[in-house]
Length: 277
Length: 277
Image 1: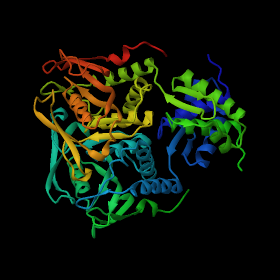
Image 2: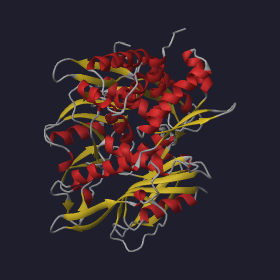
Image 3: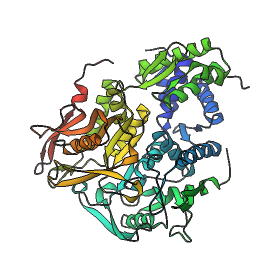
């Protein structure tokens, strides 16, 4: 059997834990993997824990006992989240982003896996204590954010379609009114895509009045599911009253002026919560 | 300044490199970050390199000289890729996956970020030597795969739409014939989504005759772009002649029988290449 030095073990364990967020790893697994005593593994983990927590990668939670082990819970410190938001704002300052109709062009922002990954960490931090079975979104722009969040929470993703694809089998459809277009639209989810009574985290890129998210909540009722949380990247600050009361937003967009091409992007309610790191 | 021990440095550097694939990191950056001599940093990197390469995480490439540094190039060993493919096949063995019309239900497979991430590593391994500016896909099911690939290659993602959304600004549309439906369809890409003369990697979830991918190639011609590679998760083995000659497939699906619910999923041409690890 290969003899592992501490230095090599630390590199391998760091990779192992980072690749498996929210997975409880028994200490015996590490002990067998490296041919080391559990006490040695505990010392390694103490080193890793200190770096992870001091550098803001997240928590390394240790559970004692027979069913115990170690679990990496990714968390992003609020100061790092604000840095990402500032980076996004800087990119948004480039000219000609305000499109006819008062839309703000942001597809390139959500096309950067680095930024999407950091937003996923923010949602994962915000909802890390909820009992969750699945992350749900509706096509198209919410999809990368849903995956980035699900990766950090070790959950599967379910995508609601705006059409009814033959490759999904039998499905449930509902009608909803999108706040943006005021038109009646349809959304569809395959029967087999979601187990009954699942605990669901809804993620989307943009929320105006909340019609699309209300649609997803209505759809989830057909599956006897429980909505444990709603996370949106950008909420509109132009809306008097949201259909949804309880949600987490990363940024708040308002004051889009198609003439002057000005707008304001402020931190969302994600940053309101009490600061723990 | 904080005094870093080697053990803590190794944990932090491992995290740093894993979070920044395909980014050249100057040794001076590490030297300053940890208050260490460059020779010490080089020793640390030798330890990390050995573990990364022995455990199959990828290469740690060192470039000497003033503009030099270290770059993490993720690669997945073929044996690990085959293990993932076997895991997918095991999941596909559950009953009732063959839908009316001879479609195979695979949305739940692509709903697992772990599997999607590993497929992304396979594509990143296959195309790691190509000069690339961007990863492109068409909505909807290719999106997670495109992001998983782009993350590993440190590239942005561009999503071709099947509609023409007002939030994209001026755009280019083309018509194409999808092999699956035989209908004329439209795909659209915003003018500002892709710089002229970009080097593009096309990623999609499924290829029958290749009509959709040919559509993307035609669309890219309007942007003076160069297609540097095409990667599909599953190709259909039922097609006599593909419209596309040069592509990488992870799996090959054939023999779907709607009556017996049988099918065959074999390794794709990704596994044909010469084995280097």
